[in-house]
Image (cartoon, rainbow, N blue to C red; front, top):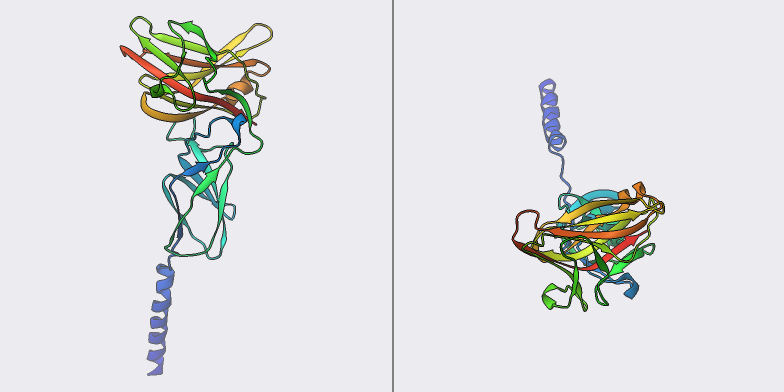
Length: 283
């Protein structure tokens, strides 16, 4: 009897233990829920506190967990308490499909204890990192900081509340009839060193597309200009972040000016663009 009983016992034991191998126990994550990021201003020299943080990059004890579009429920599989670090992300050059951790915004963090299945609400906040330098800041409150470069019409200062995001003024381009192009250049130049992270931030709304570019003026009289990013028509206020780093690296030693161009290139009969808080940050 024992010669037959022993293999049967072993088979039963293997079946019970083998189930854990075939169907291992699944770890239930603890969730962090983030609706949005608060932005804390650093004083008047840094200009507006408006932002467009659309995603988060999350790390647990310095190990990456991934990028998440907000609002987000972030699963954290953990067997011990640990530090969760969260980096605010933006749409790079206005491309929603290109999430990018914005280097000028500080991380936020929280200590998290294992609570499988529980959702922890986190009110995340950020500010400009200490190394941030504001290379250019145009609010249109004190006047019009742009001049016509080419085209049929120019950017104007408006105080109409419909076209002002905040403060006492905004830039306004109106195109109608035979006037089909408005190309404008900043009166004041800005500086940025090659290799530095350099971005332009703009609050805007518009009924026609517009483009943002940069012009480099060299001491030998040469000029190079390129439009780097642009947006489509949008009826409510939005914010765009455009990287200038690649252009500056390719055009070192120049004096730089910002360019704004709009036109009824797509066959529109008329249209307008409103921009506010044009800011260039660098480090």
